[in-house]
Figure 1 (tube, rainbow, N blue to C red):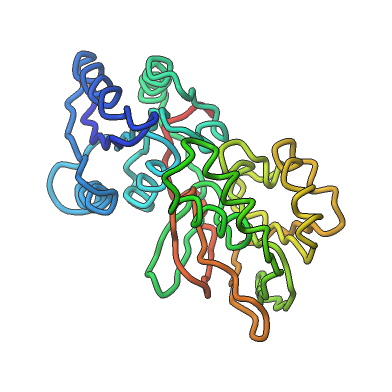
Figure 2: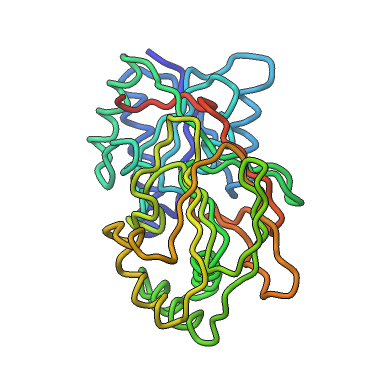
Length: 306
Protein backbone atom coordinates (compact mmCIF):
# COMPACT_ATOMS: atom_id res chain seq x y z
CA UNK A 1 0.00 0.00 0.00
CA UNK A 2 1.15 3.55 -0.69
CA UNK A 3 1.44 6.88 1.08
CA UNK A 4 -0.50 9.32 -1.09
CA UNK A 5 -0.56 13.10 -0.81
CA UNK A 6 -3.98 14.15 -2.13
CA UNK A 7 -5.01 17.62 -3.31
CA UNK A 8 -8.72 18.20 -3.95
CA UNK A 9 -10.15 21.12 -5.89
CA UNK A 10 -13.55 21.91 -4.33
CA UNK A 11 -14.57 23.88 -7.44
CA UNK A 12 -14.18 20.90 -9.78
CA UNK A 13 -17.17 19.16 -11.35
CA UNK A 14 -19.29 22.31 -11.58
CA UNK A 15 -18.62 23.47 -8.01
CA UNK A 16 -19.52 20.01 -6.71
CA UNK A 17 -15.91 18.87 -6.43
CA UNK A 18 -15.73 18.78 -2.64
CA UNK A 19 -18.15 15.86 -2.39
CA UNK A 20 -16.48 13.70 -5.08
CA UNK A 21 -13.11 14.70 -3.63
CA UNK A 22 -14.10 13.44 -0.19
CA UNK A 23 -15.27 10.24 -1.86
CA UNK A 24 -11.87 9.78 -3.48
CA UNK A 25 -10.16 10.13 -0.10
CA UNK A 26 -12.55 7.56 1.42
CA UNK A 27 -11.96 5.09 -1.40
CA UNK A 28 -8.18 5.42 -1.22
CA UNK A 29 -8.23 4.98 2.55
CA UNK A 30 -10.53 1.96 2.28
CA UNK A 31 -8.09 0.43 -0.22
CA UNK A 32 -5.42 0.54 2.49
CA UNK A 33 -3.46 3.61 1.41
CA UNK A 34 -2.26 6.20 3.88
CA UNK A 35 -3.70 9.53 2.71
CA UNK A 36 -2.11 12.89 3.51
CA UNK A 37 -4.55 15.71 2.78
CA UNK A 38 -2.62 18.51 1.06
CA UNK A 39 -5.68 20.57 0.09
CA UNK A 40 -5.82 24.24 1.05
CA UNK A 41 -7.99 27.34 0.69
CA UNK A 42 -6.15 28.43 -2.47
CA UNK A 43 -4.33 26.76 -5.32
CA UNK A 44 -1.15 28.60 -4.40
CA UNK A 45 -1.24 27.35 -0.83
CA UNK A 46 -2.02 23.78 -1.90
CA UNK A 47 0.81 23.80 -4.44
CA UNK A 48 3.24 25.04 -1.80
CA UNK A 49 2.16 22.30 0.61
CA UNK A 50 2.56 19.63 -2.03
CA UNK A 51 5.91 20.95 -3.21
CA UNK A 52 7.16 21.12 0.35
CA UNK A 53 6.39 17.48 1.17
CA UNK A 54 8.05 16.43 -2.10
CA UNK A 55 11.26 18.39 -1.60
CA UNK A 56 11.97 18.86 2.10
CA UNK A 57 13.30 16.36 4.62
CA UNK A 58 11.07 13.85 6.27
CA UNK A 59 8.87 11.17 4.83
CA UNK A 60 7.95 11.88 1.23
CA UNK A 61 4.72 10.50 -0.22
CA UNK A 62 4.90 7.69 -2.72
CA UNK A 63 2.82 9.87 -5.05
CA UNK A 64 0.83 13.10 -5.18
CA UNK A 65 -2.72 12.67 -6.48
CA UNK A 66 -4.70 15.68 -7.70
CA UNK A 67 -8.49 15.59 -7.91
CA UNK A 68 -10.10 17.98 -10.39
CA UNK A 69 -9.42 19.22 -13.90
CA UNK A 70 -6.60 20.78 -15.87
CA UNK A 71 -6.06 23.48 -13.27
CA UNK A 72 -5.26 20.78 -10.73
CA UNK A 73 -2.91 19.09 -13.20
CA UNK A 74 -1.18 22.47 -13.52
CA UNK A 75 -0.86 22.60 -9.74
CA UNK A 76 0.38 19.02 -9.65
CA UNK A 77 3.15 19.35 -12.24
CA UNK A 78 4.41 22.50 -10.52
CA UNK A 79 4.47 20.60 -7.22
CA UNK A 80 6.26 17.42 -8.34
CA UNK A 81 8.40 18.38 -11.37
CA UNK A 82 11.99 17.32 -10.88
CA UNK A 83 11.37 15.70 -7.50
CA UNK A 84 10.88 12.09 -8.64
CA UNK A 85 7.56 11.88 -6.77
CA UNK A 86 4.96 10.49 -9.20
CA UNK A 87 1.79 12.39 -10.09
CA UNK A 88 -1.65 10.77 -10.20
CA UNK A 89 -4.91 12.28 -11.46
CA UNK A 90 -8.59 11.76 -10.73
CA UNK A 91 -10.03 13.82 -13.59
CA UNK A 92 -13.42 15.21 -12.57
CA UNK A 93 -12.99 18.73 -13.96
CA UNK A 94 -14.79 20.37 -16.84
CA UNK A 95 -12.20 20.37 -19.64
CA UNK A 96 -9.88 17.46 -18.76
CA UNK A 97 -7.56 18.06 -21.70
CA UNK A 98 -4.63 16.44 -19.91
CA UNK A 99 -6.60 13.27 -19.09
CA UNK A 100 -7.64 13.09 -22.75
CA UNK A 101 -4.01 13.45 -23.83
CA UNK A 102 -2.58 10.73 -21.58
CA UNK A 103 -5.44 8.22 -21.85
CA UNK A 104 -6.87 8.54 -18.35
CA UNK A 105 -10.61 8.30 -17.59
CA UNK A 106 -12.45 11.62 -17.25
CA UNK A 107 -15.76 12.43 -15.53
CA UNK A 108 -15.73 8.95 -13.98
CA UNK A 109 -14.20 8.86 -10.52
CA UNK A 110 -14.43 5.08 -10.08
CA UNK A 111 -12.76 4.37 -13.41
CA UNK A 112 -10.07 6.91 -12.56
CA UNK A 113 -9.45 5.21 -9.21
CA UNK A 114 -9.09 1.84 -10.93
CA UNK A 115 -6.60 3.37 -13.38
CA UNK A 116 -4.66 4.90 -10.49
CA UNK A 117 -4.46 1.56 -8.66
CA UNK A 118 -3.22 -0.15 -11.84
CA UNK A 119 -0.58 2.54 -12.38
CA UNK A 120 0.61 2.25 -8.77
CA UNK A 121 1.16 -1.45 -9.44
CA UNK A 122 2.85 -0.96 -12.83
CA UNK A 123 4.90 2.13 -11.97
CA UNK A 124 4.93 5.61 -13.51
CA UNK A 125 6.11 6.77 -16.92
CA UNK A 126 8.05 9.98 -17.63
CA UNK A 127 6.46 12.93 -19.41
CA UNK A 128 7.77 16.33 -20.45
CA UNK A 129 6.57 19.67 -19.12
CA UNK A 130 6.98 23.24 -20.37
CA UNK A 131 8.94 25.51 -18.05
CA UNK A 132 8.13 29.23 -18.46
CA UNK A 133 10.47 31.78 -16.90
CA UNK A 134 9.55 35.46 -16.71
CA UNK A 135 8.81 38.34 -14.38
CA UNK A 136 6.32 36.09 -12.58
CA UNK A 137 9.07 33.61 -11.72
CA UNK A 138 8.90 30.02 -12.95
CA UNK A 139 5.71 28.16 -13.88
CA UNK A 140 5.32 24.80 -15.53
CA UNK A 141 2.60 23.77 -17.97
CA UNK A 142 1.43 20.25 -18.71
CA UNK A 143 -0.56 20.78 -21.93
CA UNK A 144 -0.42 24.07 -23.87
CA UNK A 145 0.97 27.50 -23.05
CA UNK A 146 -0.48 30.23 -25.22
CA UNK A 147 -0.34 34.00 -25.61
CA UNK A 148 -2.83 35.31 -28.15
CA UNK A 149 -6.50 35.49 -28.99
CA UNK A 150 -7.38 32.42 -26.94
CA UNK A 151 -5.61 33.84 -23.88
CA UNK A 152 -7.50 37.12 -24.24
CA UNK A 153 -10.77 35.17 -24.42
CA UNK A 154 -9.80 33.11 -21.38
CA UNK A 155 -8.99 36.20 -19.35
CA UNK A 156 -12.22 37.95 -20.34
CA UNK A 157 -14.37 34.86 -19.70
CA UNK A 158 -12.90 34.62 -16.19
CA UNK A 159 -14.42 38.03 -15.41
CA UNK A 160 -17.95 36.91 -16.33
CA UNK A 161 -20.44 35.38 -13.95
CA UNK A 162 -23.12 34.94 -16.64
CA UNK A 163 -24.08 32.90 -18.60
CA UNK A 164 -23.02 29.65 -16.91
CA UNK A 165 -20.67 27.07 -18.40
CA UNK A 166 -19.47 27.44 -21.96
CA UNK A 167 -21.70 30.43 -22.55
CA UNK A 168 -19.13 32.64 -20.86
CA UNK A 169 -16.52 31.52 -23.38
CA UNK A 170 -18.77 32.26 -26.37
CA UNK A 171 -19.63 35.66 -24.94
CA UNK A 172 -15.92 36.41 -24.50
CA UNK A 173 -15.15 35.31 -28.08
CA UNK A 174 -17.76 37.72 -29.41
CA UNK A 175 -16.38 40.54 -27.26
CA UNK A 176 -12.75 39.95 -28.31
CA UNK A 177 -13.63 39.75 -32.01
CA UNK A 178 -15.03 43.27 -31.87
CA UNK A 179 -12.13 45.53 -32.67
CA UNK A 180 -9.66 42.64 -32.99
CA UNK A 181 -6.24 43.60 -34.34
CA UNK A 182 -3.31 41.20 -34.74
CA UNK A 183 -0.70 41.28 -31.99
CA UNK A 184 2.99 41.96 -32.47
CA UNK A 185 5.42 39.15 -31.61
CA UNK A 186 9.13 38.66 -31.47
CA UNK A 187 9.73 34.91 -31.34
CA UNK A 188 13.10 33.23 -30.91
CA UNK A 189 12.86 29.51 -31.67
CA UNK A 190 15.99 27.54 -30.76
CA UNK A 191 18.05 30.67 -31.35
CA UNK A 192 16.32 31.79 -34.57
CA UNK A 193 14.69 35.21 -34.09
CA UNK A 194 11.58 36.31 -35.99
CA UNK A 195 9.26 39.31 -35.90
CA UNK A 196 5.65 39.08 -37.03
CA UNK A 197 2.08 40.21 -36.60
CA UNK A 198 -0.15 37.34 -35.61
CA UNK A 199 -3.20 35.96 -33.88
CA UNK A 200 -1.56 33.67 -31.35
CA UNK A 201 1.54 31.74 -30.38
CA UNK A 202 0.75 28.39 -28.74
CA UNK A 203 3.54 26.21 -27.37
CA UNK A 204 2.12 22.70 -27.18
CA UNK A 205 3.16 19.73 -25.07
CA UNK A 206 0.06 17.82 -26.16
CA UNK A 207 -2.73 18.13 -28.72
CA UNK A 208 -5.54 19.64 -26.65
CA UNK A 209 -6.51 22.86 -24.91
CA UNK A 210 -9.69 24.78 -24.18
CA UNK A 211 -11.81 21.73 -23.35
CA UNK A 212 -11.21 19.51 -26.36
CA UNK A 213 -9.81 21.88 -28.99
CA UNK A 214 -7.14 19.99 -30.96
CA UNK A 215 -4.80 22.94 -31.30
CA UNK A 216 -1.74 20.91 -32.40
CA UNK A 217 -2.91 17.42 -33.37
CA UNK A 218 0.54 15.78 -33.55
CA UNK A 219 2.01 17.20 -30.33
CA UNK A 220 3.35 14.67 -27.81
CA UNK A 221 4.44 15.02 -24.19
CA UNK A 222 7.16 12.38 -24.25
CA UNK A 223 9.39 13.33 -27.18
CA UNK A 224 11.50 16.10 -25.64
CA UNK A 225 10.14 18.71 -28.04
CA UNK A 226 7.38 21.32 -28.08
CA UNK A 227 5.22 22.01 -31.11
CA UNK A 228 5.02 25.77 -31.59
CA UNK A 229 1.90 26.89 -33.44
CA UNK A 230 2.12 30.36 -34.93
CA UNK A 231 -1.16 31.87 -36.04
CA UNK A 232 -0.19 34.51 -38.56
CA UNK A 233 -2.17 37.65 -39.33
CA UNK A 234 -5.84 37.11 -40.24
CA UNK A 235 -8.94 39.29 -40.17
CA UNK A 236 -11.60 38.96 -37.48
CA UNK A 237 -13.88 37.27 -40.01
CA UNK A 238 -11.23 34.74 -41.01
CA UNK A 239 -10.53 34.05 -37.35
CA UNK A 240 -14.22 33.46 -36.66
CA UNK A 241 -14.33 30.88 -39.46
CA UNK A 242 -11.17 29.19 -38.23
CA UNK A 243 -12.22 28.75 -34.59
CA UNK A 244 -14.70 25.85 -35.10
CA UNK A 245 -12.10 23.94 -37.10
CA UNK A 246 -9.80 23.70 -34.08
CA UNK A 247 -12.00 21.00 -32.52
CA UNK A 248 -11.17 18.66 -35.38
CA UNK A 249 -7.63 19.95 -35.85
CA UNK A 250 -8.29 20.91 -39.48
CA UNK A 251 -7.29 24.54 -38.86
CA UNK A 252 -3.66 23.46 -39.35
CA UNK A 253 -4.38 23.23 -43.10
CA UNK A 254 -4.95 27.00 -43.29
CA UNK A 255 -2.05 28.95 -44.86
CA UNK A 256 -1.95 31.33 -41.88
CA UNK A 257 -1.12 28.44 -39.51
CA UNK A 258 2.51 27.40 -39.09
CA UNK A 259 3.92 24.71 -36.76
CA UNK A 260 7.59 24.49 -35.78
CA UNK A 261 9.18 21.99 -33.36
CA UNK A 262 11.56 23.33 -30.72
CA UNK A 263 13.25 22.81 -27.36
CA UNK A 264 13.36 26.47 -26.33
CA UNK A 265 11.14 29.41 -27.30
CA UNK A 266 11.33 33.04 -26.23
CA UNK A 267 8.18 35.10 -26.86
CA UNK A 268 8.27 38.89 -26.55
CA UNK A 269 6.01 41.80 -27.55
CA UNK A 270 6.96 43.57 -30.78
CA UNK A 271 7.13 47.35 -30.51
CA UNK A 272 4.74 49.31 -32.68
CA UNK A 273 2.01 46.65 -32.61
CA UNK A 274 -0.78 45.78 -30.15
CA UNK A 275 0.89 43.81 -27.33
CA UNK A 276 -0.11 40.16 -26.90
CA UNK A 277 -2.19 39.35 -23.81
CA UNK A 278 -0.77 37.63 -20.75
CA UNK A 279 -0.01 33.96 -21.34
CA UNK A 280 -2.15 31.12 -20.01
CA UNK A 281 -1.04 27.52 -19.43
CA UNK A 282 -3.50 24.67 -18.79
CA UNK A 283 -6.20 27.36 -18.58
CA UNK A 284 -4.34 29.10 -15.72
CA UNK A 285 -2.77 32.55 -15.81
CA UNK A 286 1.02 32.27 -16.20
CA UNK A 287 2.07 35.89 -16.72
CA UNK A 288 2.98 38.70 -19.06
CA UNK A 289 5.47 38.51 -21.90
CA UNK A 290 8.39 38.23 -22.32
CA UNK A 291 8.59 34.55 -21.47
CA UNK A 292 11.33 32.01 -22.00
CA UNK A 293 9.79 28.55 -22.44
CA UNK A 294 11.92 25.40 -22.25
CA UNK A 295 10.97 21.74 -22.61
CA UNK A 296 11.90 19.84 -19.44
CA UNK A 297 12.15 16.31 -20.82
CA UNK A 298 10.90 13.60 -18.46
CA UNK A 299 10.49 16.06 -15.58
CA UNK A 300 7.30 14.42 -14.25
CA UNK A 301 6.69 10.76 -13.42
CA UNK A 302 3.05 10.17 -14.35
CA UNK A 303 0.79 7.44 -13.01
CA UNK A 304 -0.95 6.60 -16.28
CA UNK A 305 -0.92 3.82 -18.89
CA UNK A 306 2.02 3.84 -21.29
